[in-house]
Length: 109
Image (tube, rainbow, N blue to C red; front, side):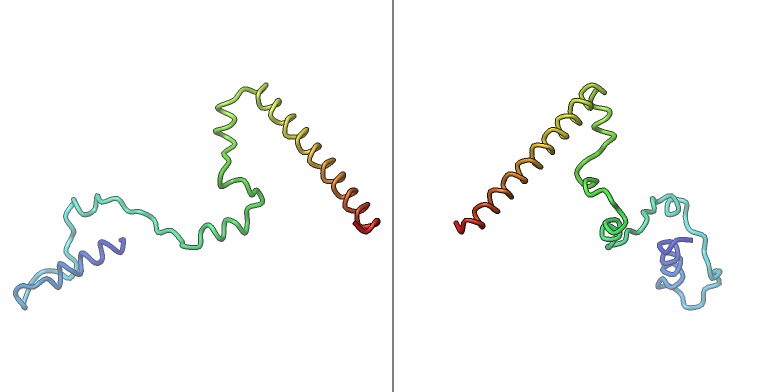
């Protein structure tokens, strides 16, 4: 029995009318009321708790299934190789910038 049906039962019991009613304590609800959709309650902190347990930080804006269904295997391999190449370029760029900063700090620039 859901909370909604309990409240409706109580509302029917305590409805204004004759004070001395011979109606039973729990009146069966009409069929229309029982067929109403019931939505589960959601926690306000659901995203917070999901973030604590989730190791993949890209879940909020990246859907692997959509990407897989929308691209061919050849395109996915090409994208992976491109990402690896870009990561390698970023790494070498960071190393070069770090070396430049070290040389400037050593020379007092």
